[in-house]
Length: 536
Image 1 (cartoon, rainbow, N blue to C red):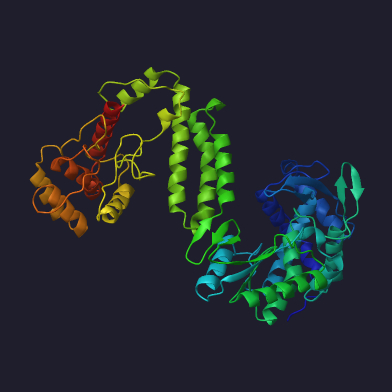
Image 2: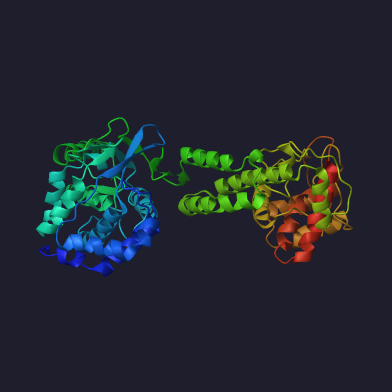
């Protein structure tokens, strides 16, 4: 293991300071106790960097205390942040760039927090691999209480000394650790901890907890650690209990940290392992319900109908949030959740637009501009129900077997599963709907254009990807084959043509949606609008 004795001279470079400032400026952040913002520092950049370089060369540089900021946690409690000044952040960034390559080569391969070219997705994938490929389904979920605030300064310097022996660098790190904090205008000494919010604090925490990683590795335990979030993966309940005892001893006795006994527990992958916002199961990975609830609450706050903002402004504000959420949770099995969220959000956006139009005449004008030529029915511009999309089979998958809006039902009998598979494929392709409307209590089923029942049955039988059970069902309904038929609802839609129409409406659309031209899609949009108005 290589030891470095002279590193301080690498900091005495204006180009390195400028590079560090660019990273600090890109990361943004609030001002420190001196009130100097990033833009103010950048306006006089050359003089500031020259002054900083002179202080480092003459060793007259002295870090200023950090500014205390308290933010609430999701599960209750408070998180204490320390915001250094801009000039202190520049020096810390340069020091971080200097020390990271040195310590990066010694870190545990299952440590992912605040490391270059490693992310939360890598940590989740590693934990998933241990659970599903290696069968380590008994997991110890460790929770540390205020990890950054309880790092021992003596142990920090001792851990850094194993690779770096430069006294000037060690003195500079000690100054950052002991700079103190300003609380309500009063200076308070920091005897333990590294301010959470400092640029170099994540690196210090990784160096500090690397001793825990190595100790667990020597004892043969499989771990996944992201900063202070620790998972210990074992093959049995007994092994998990032993690992929990050993890990608690190392963290509390050797590293002088506090383990939260209330949140530290042993779980099984069948129940779900909560880690970095997801639930890792034996056969699935889901979004944690509390994360989804919090995200929907944020979207709900941004999409109020009485906000008065133009719809485009609301969409522009939503897009970065939606992209970030979808990019992070794409690792989970969340396609259904994304579809439901998108449908719910589109309804809220439609309600905003109706509220902004105020008058139904403006809605009618917009529909005329888009090609609708039928009559208009009454609509309440301020009602949530007016913005709700129908759950008929041409729009999206119904939440129940019977649609509360149009009385459409899934066909009963042995072909239900095949019909659901058929619809699942069609729903992915269709954006506006099908050729034909479904039957309702107020409108009788419509035949498929000019095609006869027999022609419809022949069309079904000619489709290559049609499940055999569904194809036979259609041929029986068309009278082409003998068999029994269970009506969807007694007294409604008992005619063969109507029954076949129900079946073909989705399947035909799925077969032809990809090859349809833009003009054809618009024609179907207009037809779909007429059908909705007729049903209303």
